[in-house]
Structure formats: C-alpha cells, structure tokens
Image (cartoon, rainbow over all chains, first blue to last red):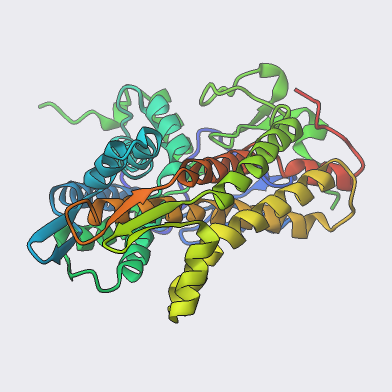
Length: 228
Length: 208
C-alpha cells in the first residue's frame, strides 16, 4: 500500500521535469520536486509558486474533520448571551440571519448564511471528502467537481470575519446588561483556527497531482489487498 | 537566464489546478476548466465592478447604517457618525477598528484597483513587482470590510425589541455589503499578469 513517506516530495504523473507558470507574472519555469517543508518562489516576482507542506494529507484530513465537529457546536450553542433585566438574548449565526430577515433585509440575511455557513461547509466538507480517501490513493466519485467547488468557495468563507464582528459588536454594546460568552464562541474560535490549518495544510498543486494519479490508476493493482 | 512567459510559448496555466498546457486545447486536460492565456476581458470586468462599487460607496456612507431607538427617542447613525461617536466617548479602539474596516480599507482598495487597472493598460510606469505585491495585499484584506455588515447583524440579533433599546438595520447596510462583494469580484477579475505583459511591452488584455 502506498502510504505517505515523510521527507519526500509528492508523486507526480509525469516522470522527469515539468514546468509551472507563475499565477502572478506568468514566468515559465522549471518545477523541481521539493522536500517536505520547502517552498518554491517565482524567480521573477518572488511570489510563492507552490509548497510541499509537511504531512499534508494527514493534516488536511485531521483539521477539516475537527473543524466540521466545531461547526456543529457553533450552530448548536449560542456564542454570546446578553441578560438585560428580565430579557435574555442569545446569539447564534442563524439567529443573526433570522433577525436580519425579520427586519426586512433578506439579502443581508442570505449573505450572512452563505458567507458563514454554506461556504465554510462546502470548503471543509469538500476538503475532507477529497483528502481523506487520497491518503489511501483513492479518489471518490465526483472528486474533481468537489475540489473545483471548494476551491471556488474558499475566498467567500468569512467565519473569521464574523468572529471579529462578534468582538467588535461586544465592544460596541458596552454596558447593556450581563454579557456571557458561551460554548458557541469557543467553538467558533476552534473552527476558525482549524479552518485556517486545514486550508494551509495542503498545496493546491499537490492536491491536484495526487488526485490525477488516483484517478488514472484506478483500479490500482498495488492497492488490492491479498485475498488469500 | 532569460525569463519567458508561458503565454509567449502558447502555454496557459490552468487557473484552478495550476497545470500548464497548450492554450489550443481549450480545456485543461486535468480538471476540464476552460483555459485562457489571460483572464478574459480582465480590465473591462474589473473597471465595471470597480465603478459600480464606487457608485454604491456614496449611499453606503451617506445613508444611516443602523438606528438605535430607546426611551429617549431614535438615533440614526451613518458609518462616519458612528465612528465619531465612539471617538468622542473615548472608545478609541472601537473607533479605529470601525474606521479602518469600513472606511479606510474600502477606499484604499478602490484606489489600489484603479491604479492597477491604469498600470495594466500601460498608463503608469511603476515597478510590476511592487504592483504585484499591492494586488496580493488587496486580495487578502478585502473580505475584512465585511465585518461592519456582520456587526450590524449581530447587534440587531442581540438588542431586539423588548429590551431597553432596540437596534434596527439601516438602508446603507445593503449598499455597503454590495461595495465589499463588488470590490472582491473586481480583485478576482483583475489579472496581475497583464502588469508584467506591459513591463515587457506586450499587450495581451484582449487575447482569449
């Protein structure tokens, strides 16, 4: 069974040297295989071309599954509770969206749901769906489409901005009543951190190279377990 | 060693998966997304998004973004009056955060994108290396402006009718969200490779 070998570069479908073009300046250059932890930078503009992240698939899998667990907690428990006299208000993302909807702003409400619920879910769920089976050299059906969609969703996942928004809102609120930070708040901190690590866990080029191999080699004779 | 661009050899790097393949193939052999030497109609699209966002920036700042009603009557706050209120009350941290996220970043982003568009059309001559860095920063910070929209949504949810006061979203919130989304689209449709094409004296902004 082909497993991850620490310290080595990731496998590629073409033997021999391949070339990459910088996404910022289009300089065509050799793309050498890198040892783990090394990064290749463009020789003209200096922006990073690609990087061999250490234990990439394991990290992407682990952090995206952890993030998905945190995501469940974020939606189940309120992140902030305000007690003002006899009235108690609890905040979850859905309640913030619901309040905007009720105040006659359906577009903002839908935007909030998309940026803080749908886009992160597609990003993390997609990453887990693709990277977990890739650890065993397998690509599940639709892996290409899923990769495409979660890459498109990445810039629109704004949970860290929402978390920052909660902090600013608390500063703005000042002394309205007793403010308690709940489980949802800590889960959101965990979710933001795990999302960042999951996305930074694997390079785009590596993911596609591995995906290409997994799709081409199906069924892989190396992967078939001895039956008798 | 002479540096050649991929476009000069008829090669396009896939925008999604990064594989370099001949542009004549039309679609990336690895991920099937369409291949382009440069992002199609990059400058036109960027200008289009940019001008719409500049137009919407005025209602976003002139109309009230939220109104707070309490026992003493209602007050309508625009973004700037909110910042000034916090400054007067001595909450300098909140004032600076809101000012930079809601006013400074969007304005700087629009100026940066205008500059990049002019440079990519060959109107100014700044080092493309610095402009590339500027583009990179523009792409990274843009989403953080959304914080103001979320803050209003959170405040509306937390301070609802029934408590001592209530917070209602104002009409500016929609324009402001649109400004942030449109500038993000503008940054996405801009192709920084055009800056380097200008640098070596080629214009590929119209190529497919």
